Image (cartoon, rainbow, N blue to C red; front, side, top):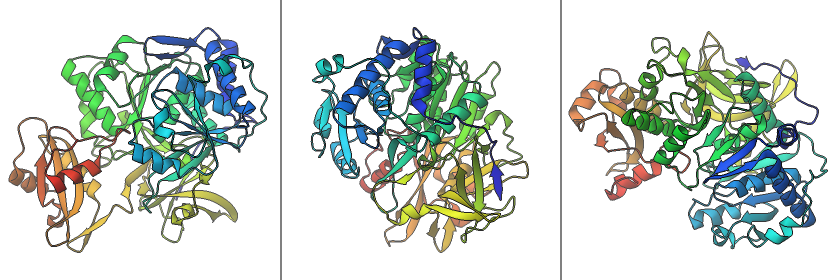
Length: 524
């Protein structure tokens, strides 16, 4: 089964920062970035980014180089990112919210790291690296002496623009690289398909190390709008909602769990800042659609919810679906829609053969969104980038490891991870299916199911439940689940908690839930 995306031509040189430079020339006085009360115009942001690019070039960090960026959300962060791109190098986000041990692990996984950009507040986190550290405060005089003109660096769509870490099944984080062509194709699709423009101001709410954040950071600058940044390392729902209320922000990109938090905040406060947005583009984890439908369908809500699917290895987003079209009587699981421009979805069996419409298989991505591959090693995960024959021609694909199928109407449905299925009492089970069933029960606001060994060493299921009101009775939840699930899929234990913990990326922190099971302490 092949689900094709619309074919749209790209420029001969699809380089992302060239679009930013065009806006700096056409609308130099427009505000490019707003952070902590500070504003910077396109003219001034472009000039500062150019100075940083010239500094990198002077120090030999040009085309082909990889530059780590360990900065808090700030104007300087955008200067460093844009300047790195302009120098022809690729940037690697190093999130200062990560523990020091995690950053040391990541730094050791970046091959030929040329330099790291830091600030006084973050420089200690990266001093262990075997690469020179550019402290922006100490380099201020050198930067001021650099030219403000655009560097003349020849690039193509094949050149790398950034590389992000994603979890690896081997236990070692994988550094996956994205080309300018991949990123340009994504941003061009979002801009044209959803009519983003100079008024499509954006608020970043996800952690810097997240693949989603790279799209969120660049999207408004690609279409000439203003980027709003929160001056905090970790997601702050109160600050985010206040900024949505006080500024003319029109778009937000986030994980599904972050959307739930924002919706809950709006409902509790009686506000309408989220309701008035043009778009929330969200995904990254299984959607519990019941958590947002009532709010989304309330009278006067003009916000379009775009349920999207993709992977870091393919520039973050491959498909999109307008949740307004969702009907529970048609699909038990909300679709993730159709592919973006110049992107195809293949549903394949274990032998990489096509599967008919409606039958589940592995979701594979092809087209101009498929990235350059992993930079740090050639382990088993590198085989996910492979080639298949379609009508006698070779087609490069990325095997996502996700299960899904295509409906008769041409919508992609994601069923869950192939590798998260577990055997409980001899039966193969997908915990996400149980979470969806729990989410449909009256009184359950949110649910997460984790797998852990019992006293005998066998796997058992534990469900963490966030109630809409009073604490839920285990026997009642179990009895109601048995009306829709076989007995072997009903969790052995239920725990009621006030909220599900989130990772810095805004996803459910399942490791924290497992820690709670082991230690008995409340989940973070």
